[in-house]
Length: 523
Ligand code: FAD
Image 1 (cartoon, helix red, strand yellow):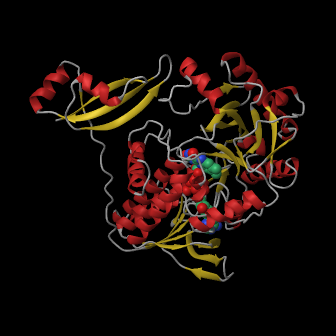
Image 2 (cartoon, protein in one colour):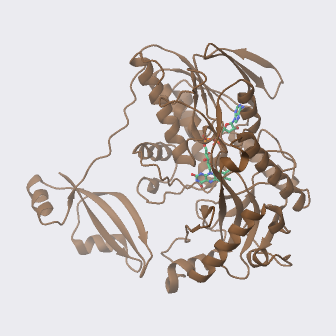
Image 3 (cartoon, protein in one colour):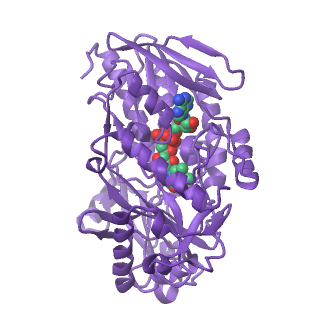
């Protein structure tokens, strides 16, 4: 019988030493590993071992082990009639829906306006070094989607067990195997850029056809059905009008021109809450000290992270997408705009920590108009571009100077790519947002020692935390405006983050398979 037990490993000991003390000599599988840093830090491993039935039952009765509940394998049912599907976007939602649909037997074509990874990496480097932005091949657009230049955190608050399937596929494609059991799985940009092309090759082996530098420009809906799609090859400029049985829209939250096109074609879109603000950079050792206390230099501890919230009068303020040992990057996808985000490599060894600090904004702030919300994001990004000196340097201000409303003459010395420039961020954001961030930092500085040291620096602006809108869909994941259109992932407004977008893609694909196999109408 497979049973599980927890093994506590103090940071001065080793896992094998603790196993030896417990007398465990059999083979085992690690199914969970977490770090408890509240007092004296220790790791908690959950391991699974195989025991003879009698011994297992006795140890269960004695409360020494628990019966292990296996995670169910995801079985993809075959589709009974072969249909063609176009998937728009090669982010996690697009790639994982492609995997399920291809395994089920669909004829799958995947397009992306951006380029394959190797070319995309060159374009992003060119942007950071020479400040030449390619509007279709950048940090947001191209093979792998927005998460390709990221921290590669795979944590999700979504309870769906399919996250284990997502991690397993990542590992099969070259991600570090510990993501299968770490409670905060992390891959890092350097490894993700190897995983994504391997995943593409796996899909190609299943018959999926990829077309990069190919943009969905228009779709024609007649009788509640997308009848034609207009695709433009961005290398040749040639447009083709094509037909597919089903369209999966996995366009991410930066495809503003595509959202505008959907509105023109009468696809129902609705405003949703999101959050905007800044990103704060600290020295990593400041955060390590804050979280690990006197153990902060211990070699067996990873660069620390944090998660903070502040309940404001009208809006909550929270940290988001915290990147230990990472960089704040300029992640623009529109010309003359600056938007920041965070990335790290697998080793998380930049010596700096960063996190978005964002304030909630609501549909009522924009009279429930998603396009006003989008214009608000765009206006902030353009103002940030100008404040940074109109060369894609990111405007920055020390946290205390932001609180006190004054310029900074010295900023943090690293932890960003490509450049930061001293500016009055307190004058860039709308007053209610500035006031809420100020209050939150004053509150945190009183309660969390070390969090607001002299050199903590804000970088702006953080506007793309999640989509400002929803492409409204039914329970079966199809758009309420077209029965064969499936909006999925972060751009659809129903997911946020790499893993939850991948799961949303899987669920959309499974829903279509069920609908076809059961001969059901859209629900
Ligand atoms: P996306 O990944 O955004 O992919 C959409 C794709 O669609 C893009 O490749 C785009 O080129 C393509 N596309 C758009 N419009 C068209 C069109 N008209 N025609 C053809 N193609 C089109 N999340 C985490 O969970 N952990 C992290 O550590 C993390 N770090 C991040 C760091 C950065 C710098 C960024 C930008 C994001 C980060 N995120 C992170 C968020 C995460 O990347 C997204 O939530 C996730 O990628 C969304 O997946 P998606 O498939 O829905 O869309």
